[in-house]
Image 1 (cartoon, helix red, strand yellow):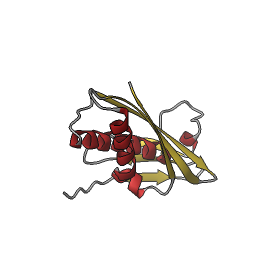
Image 2 (cartoon, one colour):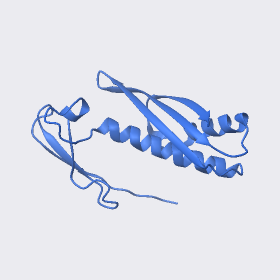
Image 3 (cartoon, one colour):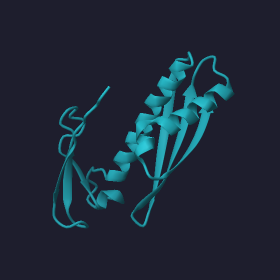
Image 4 (cartoon, helix red, strand yellow):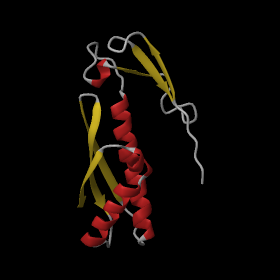
Length: 142
């Protein structure tokens, strides 16, 4: 199966003082959503916005949750809930690490099966494969 997605970025002004918008034309999830350098830290005017790092870690957490659901399904388990928190660390302009913490409710699965599934999903979700950062994982059945 082949998937093609498009996102549009518009930017005006300098890197530090400028602002931009992001649009995802197909889903319209983002429709001229603001982003800026200031939004990486804190918008002084309190306005909403995002930044590329937040979008990357959101995409990674979402991709991981979906991949884990598929891996669990392949083992004969259907998760009742998968909650994934992604934390990205950037230093000196380089994304160094992403930590994924998953809490899952999966009836009937053993700890060993669950840990193997979480590791498989971490290594094989499409976003993990494209990132050039150390990816750590913490997994807990609830």
